[in-house]
Length: 621
Image (tube, rainbow, N blue to C red; front, side, top):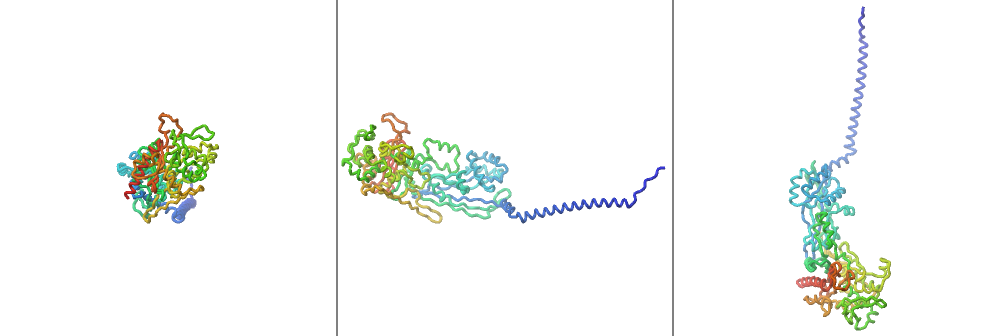
């Protein structure tokens, strides 16, 4: 017989339920603790956001809502002495990109390039600027686009996140090549410009050459600022605050555009330089370097191919010959040598009253090599006046050794033939008046008498620039007193106009130049043009006024005296320095024609045309 199991007592069943409740209570406690801890953490995080880091996050929020735009100022205008515009501004549209508003910058650039060609130089410049601009600011990509390109981009702008079409001002030069080497040009700041002056980042363009560079700080003005509220897509909603930019100052130059154009026409296709200077003020009226270039190419960002073509041109149109070209002066040095002779009484008084006899060549005592005159049959007995009028080489060969190279070098240095004039253009170079000390230091060699002989006629190591030649001539005609050559006449603007005062220059000499000597040299130079045997007498016959001058033919390399035709690059340089009117000079001219050959046949006629235009304008006024 099987027994039935015993039932569990009620008390045991109750004890089992108590155990379950304990487990439940424990779980509830743990869950509550977790919820409470999470809540505490949430409160702490909210406290950090709202209290501790409030300023940081409110700033980030404001940046998402408010955008700071830099407002470049309009660049100051440039005028000639009569108020004719030489450089001004033109409105255009540029393409900029806000990098933080686009997810894929490279893909965006590819889309833009399908509508607007992007040169490699454009992309390089864009990426350089992007590294220096904050993410919320537009980075310029293209500074000028055509109307057709603008229309294409405007239609597709919604599909180009981060692209901004902005109004922009570019520089324009109406006279192009005519004024290129005076005005210079502006260009978009490159990486070097930004490293040197970080503030250039906020200017669309800065001066790179000429007046534009020298007076860049005056011309470019001060930037403004604009706070703009934007929507979630970065589109402007409203302007919150604006500080307008301050326009750059206007510059009024001494240059006369009419005379500048006359000089360019007179130079024609010749390569060289032409300068017209007022000796009693230092005002530069004409400053030509041929050939020129179109500075407008630089204003909106030149393509690499365009720059390569310009920089590889064998005529070097970017090179400012009037300011930086160093050439042997040749015979234009002879009036200064004549003034030195008149200032050296022990040599002047010991000379034969008939002068020096010129048989067509000169021999240094105890030297076999002859030094030839340009006139092989010679000039016969030659005085100083005749030597300047007919440009007798033998006369100056003869006095050179008596004067000595140290005295020659020291005297010529007084007239700025070897040093910078201080003109208000960047990049001026010094000339060179050689001396034994210079040769020893530079070449570690001794000085020879033959080098003194050729120095006396402006050959050998001697070099000068067209500008220095013009200034030296001005000092010669104004009896050693003058003013520093300059272009700036006055600075104008919205508030005031200030005239520019040139720095006075006065040469000092231990040689004590006699007062009468200046006039004698000036008259000898008048005879060069109007004398019976003057080297520029052909010019004198064509003029309706009296002027003075000195021709020069500077040898580039020693060539055999034969009838064989030489390459143009080996031909002599043609020089002419001159002035008008003859007795009371008001304008000085200096002409240099590279490989032009004869100064009397090539350079002198150019000078005559420029002075004729000057005198005609003067008489008309």
